Every structure is written in structure tokens, then in C-alpha cells.
Length: 159
Image 1 (cartoon, rainbow, N blue to C red):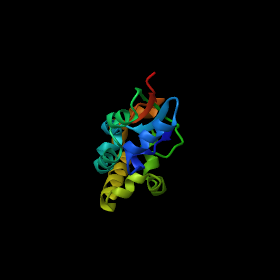
Image 2 (image 1 turned 30 degrees about the vertical axis):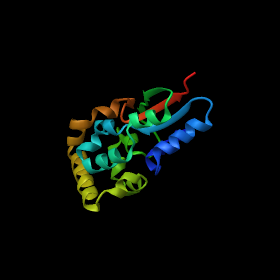
Image 3 (image 1 turned 90 degrees about the horizontal axis):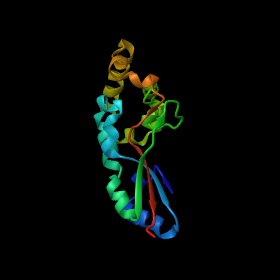
Image 4 (image 1 turned 120 degrees about the horizontal axis):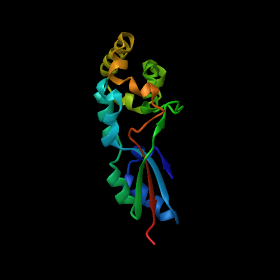
């Protein structure tokens, strides 16, 4: 099992192949699909964060190829009240991203220039204050879950 970690590994294929080698049953990987990150409203404010994350997460096809076997890729809906601190967990609570401590707990912001972060957060604050954010992106506030980039990959060995 690998939970939101493969994007931190130096040798993704080797790590995934080792998971397969030591497992008699399914291997489970929770990760983000870099190609789906644009679904999150943050892409309108900080395309830099989205691009950084997209580059860090191994492609889903790369993961399934390394795991081999019979792979199922399942979207993981994020509940509106998700307590985890990853970016998409705040899809319906954009005000939380204005807190520097929240962003500091998210590794992606460490790869973005301070000026880009300040610009993005100033624009977000301005749009929240004016109501522009709610007009453009507010529908998730009443949506119980968001299907963003989170994926569960279940790789079962071939019989």
C-alpha cells in the first residue's frame, strides 16, 4: 500500500515493482492524476502550483505499467468536510487557503516563487471579498463531494 507518496520516490518503477514483488495479493496506491489537477478552481489563481504538482505526480499509466497485473483506477471523491490538508480538500472552503500555515503544510507551495504565491493569494482574497469567487466557482460550497485528481489504483496479480 502506498498512500499519496509515489510522487516523493526517487525511483518510482523500482518502488512499485518492489510492492508487487512482496505482495501476494492486490497492491493499492492512492495518488493524484496530474492530468486532472486542472479541475480544481486553484488552477485559475495559481497555475504554477498546478504545473508543479502535475510534474511531480507520476502518470497513472506509468504506475499501472510498473505494477502490472489487472489494474483498476478508481476516482476518489473528496468530501466537502475533508480534514486532510491537501489543496483539493479545500475545494468548498477557499478561505482556508488564505492561511499561510495551511499552504505551508502543502509541499507544492514550496516549489513556487514567493511572488507567484502572493499574487495568487491576493487575487483569491480580492475575489472572495467581492463575491467574484462565489460567482465563478461557488457551486462546490453546496456540493457534498468533489471528484478532482485523487485516484485509487488497485493492482491485482494475474492468476
